[in-house]
Image (tube, rainbow, N blue to C red):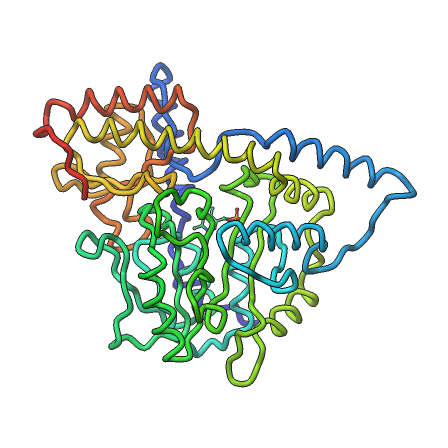
Length: 403
Ligand SMILES: *Cc1c(COP(=O)(O)O)cnc(C)c1O
């Protein structure tokens, strides 16, 4: 028996377990101190009432001989795929419901999609970014090159003709930097991919946070994207489904490589290795996209937006440079006094009880930066903002210093 040796190339511990360990150690040492958690990217508001009602109703259907359902279609029930198709229409993207595959979340699909690609492909991954892209490719032993996201490019790397990439990851709005591509900027990526015959894996998990005109909600807002891009999205951040589990992946019919339809390959993969998402959950997800559901989940997103605004305002008063917060629940700040991001994590926890995420955990270019999330209750955010003002307000020259 031989193990997959590629696992030896993975980093020992997952970033968030390391943070949890540090926070637990701090809490044990200082039981009197309040801990203000703005670290992990998990939602805090409950499911919308329309979602809960639909799931209750679906649970009753499953308990009745007349309406009970067993295995559903692997790609998702038509009622949900059609609801997702209609949702895309609201931002001007017209898909066929059959191009949409429902799953238990974007993370699984982002990992599983790699089944349809040969190990011998060069993968281009932004740095810093959601660690799942790097780890899933390391597990498969693929060659990875990084696209640096930094202050010079506004944390939005653009294609470089000298880099030969076959599989390109784009996360917009980005986790952790909060930077979001405009439709115009994505056009350059689509052109680059189509010229090279590459495939773009576009993660739109935070599309519902986009608030500024001209920024993309979907890569399919760009002409030619159906010929080169797969899009991943999720109800997790949009509708608070992190614990309920539902996402979707769009694989257009027009996406063909080496004479093979990637849509057909993905269908074959899913029907072989996946048996669909629970009926009850799919009813809940469809309810999130109903008129009533959308109004309710929209109010939740507004709460997170208001939190993000408060954090930005607090930072404005300290002179700490930051980006994000406008089209994303994440605020990406520059560690003051050139502190290393893990040292800043310890410093902030020690002095204020605020827990964030060290940028270094998201890639080499994340070093020297720090992520705060707006996924927290209003009271926690208020307290954290006050602490940030107290800690940095006096020590650093005042005035807004947006990166
Ligand atoms: C949270 C998140 C996801 C969503 O994952 P789920 O498995 O759907 O919960 C996907 N991509 C990014 C960048 C995320 O931050």
